[in-house]
Length: 408
Image (cartoon, rainbow, N blue to C red; front, side, top):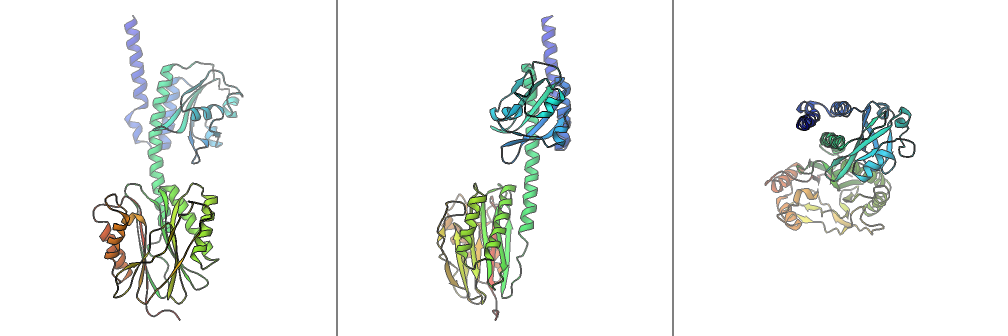
């Protein structure tokens, strides 16, 4: 008799396992998959409610994302602070929590109390060691959940976590690519007296990140030229990049001093982007196109190619990156921009490799650049440094050449 009971128990466990690992679930979109998992979980655990709450981008609150039996949680946009109430405790502890009696002292979500939920079981949703959300079930009658119930709910949470992370990763990359394309046009704005070309290639390993370039005429007659790199990758880096690029344009309207522009930009990053680190180089071309003033916030040195001369670096002092240290002094250097000469800006994804130093990469780039058309220079740079394999980090380059005749 005991053997039959044991065998029946094993068969029931197998049935439960197959129900939530059914290969057919993989064909569903994320929303449908989560809904179906919650319906099956309620059935298997004989529960009256089931819900998934995911951490918001700040990591401070859980947001109701999917529900079965308590759909109003999602409709009303329920948010639970991590560490508070039932779901918040599950997220803070990173381990299962069981409540045999639900009341206002242990649950802060009024929907659960008003619905008459008597008992709750919740488990964390994990991405490796990191908690990304909470899955919980509830019953309208008092109940003590078993170890098998906890094990099954953990299995569902693992399945939901994998699907959620895969989906969010795809959405993150798609949104980042769209944002990059909207901010980085194929060819910057045309300016009389200047020929301009640019290239942008997203990294294959890290995905789209925070590399950017810009060129814009100013009301004073000067022309602003910028390039930068926000640390990190993905949608957040692309969003921060967009904010930094827009802020630089705004500050450029107030002063023609590139060091002053970067000082103001750094103050903005320190205050509104406290966890961000970025490099940037900003140059201002004078209205007659005869000289350029450059300031660098930790960015790689620009190169200048002139007719009949070897390509050289502009020896601008690389001050600290944006966001590194408050009240960082900023410097500038002025250099001639002779007819036919070309300014070449780039990000570290072009030259940085594990197999060589930055100086070696810059030297390879310098030798590859010959004064000519800006499109040819961009192509030559990419061909010289992206031959071994696809770039693992973002690559952005911007070439600006003074043409003849110069504007009056």
